[in-house]
Length: 89
Image 1 (cartoon, helix red, strand yellow):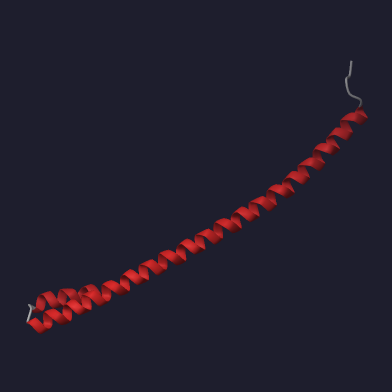
Image 2 (cartoon, helix red, strand yellow):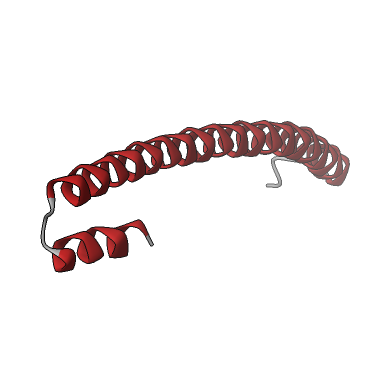
């Protein structure tokens, strides 16, 4: 009634274990490569975001500074100039 002998079952178990170990090595390598790619992409995105933030902050800083200088030359209200100075902090 048994379709498979004991030696067939043992051989099949060995093949299954071998294939599982091969598959796990492949998956681990693939996961490491995916993680490295994701980390590299995140680093690039963070650097570009930081550069964009810094450049926009630099531009706005100089625009507000120029506005303060123009308004102070024209004799504008001191509270307006102080408010603009507060924005530079």
